[in-house]
Image 1 (tube, rainbow, N blue to C red):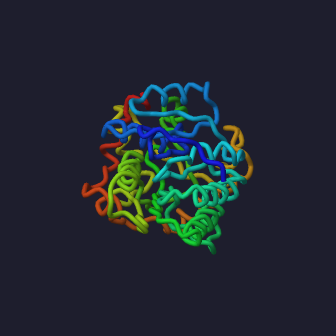
Image 2: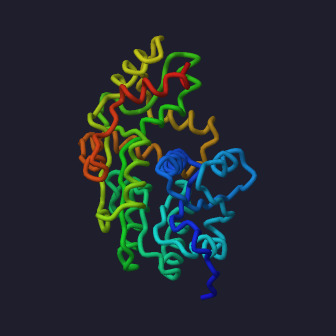
Length: 298
């Protein structure tokens, strides 16, 4: 395979998905630690890309998961890569392509953002494709770190409009508990796996310190923002309608409904020690998230 000459000072860490929620937090974490990185971006002129390019130590390179040549260029000289794509119908194929190209490029270590309870036999499409990619990474003979986070606390930001306007957010979940996690803790674990020894061939199950109902989250958020916030349990069909209005593609919307059915069954209530194991620090609780993000909901 054709290889490029890499300057000695070139970053040896590659981030994909760097303009998303987790990727932005990871980029910021690496920058705070003085660690240079390369970031693959699909839209070089987008505002999120401009913000990323302004981060100290960031080398932004254009590329696309559907363009193998651009991935080959981005992977040149890389020693550790962070793998994250949008959850679309193409995600499995895109990630499998990336894994094969990383193997061909001689990348020693992949850090993959997977998902809580990833399983090839799961009824949840997201959990099936993550498990398929995990297995492909093992089969490729690459050293890996798999991050399996539970539901993101920052996912509540998707309901910012209804929380501000009506003091409400919605989900088909009833009183089921979820050990939600702060994205900043996912980023801390990813940063550790990308920069420190000792995380090779590890799978970290990542949760917050407690399993909460959505009603409990609403109460904590209300205390932080200073106005009433309530959770409203809805039927899956109502969430499907909300997602359609918000412009979610059908495949992704159906996947989210499968996710919430999984949560409703109580399958995401376990509190795991992955954040502590990987970073030596306990995970943030929901009260800290609500306090820190209160301005976004006001």
